[in-house]
Image 1 (spheres, rainbow, N blue to C red):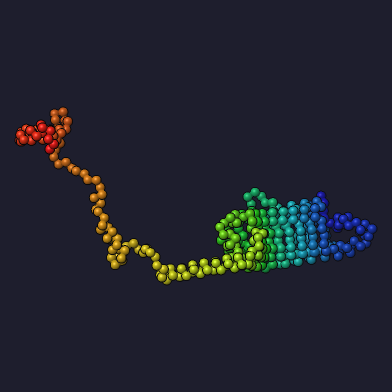
Image 2 (cartoon, rainbow, N blue to C red):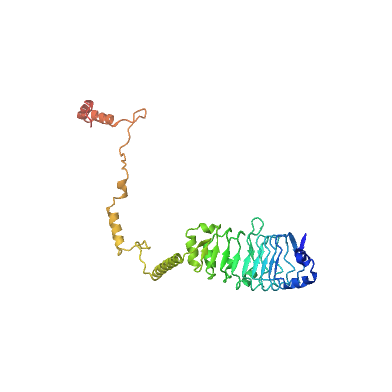
Length: 342
């Protein structure tokens, strides 16, 4: 276990071994302190370093942020790649402008609402539990709405940013490798960020939507770089004009529909009266058609009774006629015997 304290600072400064008397004065004048990658797991009392403005503590084993209330002049805090799980004990750092917390195990962005001078917040690549995403405390987001300019939330399983719309001063957004996919939500949020200059959304599902880049450019009118590619001013103006023209045409069309000036090839009312020309044409068309029975196969119905012999076998017509001929008309009998067809 390695604790950051004044003794560790003294040991790291070889020129103080023979000049102990000047060490206290040195701590009071100290503005930059770099103890990155020293296997530090805790921060002890550093209250003698009252003029500290920049503190480098990245790549250590720190689990809690504490004992920094003395650093009222601190402007930059680099404490990424540690084992921090909660953002705490930073409210006294009223001059803090850049905070680097990436690569920790933070699940909620909180406890920063008192930092009215914070310009940059880097909280990318948190080691989150399976299935969870980085959350934002509304109080913290609202507290940073008038100061935060740079937000880095890369690779945090984030699927929506609607709660961040109040960050009206934002100029840089780094949100690559998340789960953003709702274009309408993004357009709504981006329209609240008029000062946005640079944005990176690579690795999000929304990047695969049709005309994704065109839609972002038309909404973010001051955007200079999107996903690592510079935006040409001529292309931006063309897209903005095209969108304005499209919206104007839609507005005119909607107004015509509302005022009843829009005409259609067919009336929506299919109960056409005789005064409508289409009614006459349709009547003529029906008049030229044959009745339905003409299209069906005809069926003949036998009216005379069926005659059978003693065994129930149907007697052929020729036989019947022959029988009649023998009794009533001898001429018919003679013709049937000669094979004449009746």
